[in-house]
Length: 161
Image 1: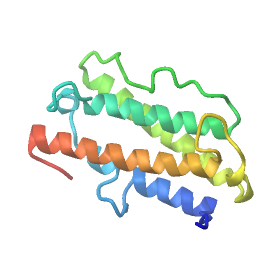
Image 2: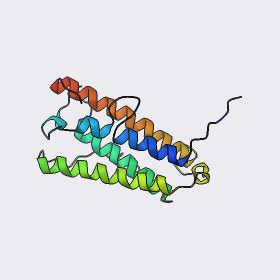
Image 3: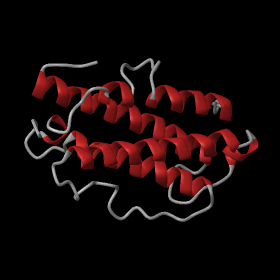
Image 4: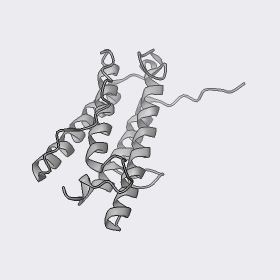
């Protein structure tokens, strides 16, 4: 019989910070990958119909924002998964996408820090059955897409952080 490990809110907040800002075991975190990336590179699609970095940034932000809302008791609004479609190709659109991502991260981290350890076991709708499970999923999601963006950058620009 397997035993469920308990990961406390402080640990989850720390891991969220690592997945977003840096110090993650898996490699570059989201902001490390995006550091110095210009608006021209984020629109490239080196893998056929795959998503661009611009789209991935919107998607990651959408899910961090959705998690924050769910922790706050809101229902799911997962109709589009955050795939950005309003890209006009400008530096301003890229700056706005990065700011939205930053705001989503900040909101989620604040929500996690405010949680008691007991709240992590509360049931949550449309997610792994608990807040803890939702947050573990967000950490996995961040790691997956950070790696995906790294591969795009290596392919289109021959660079990485």
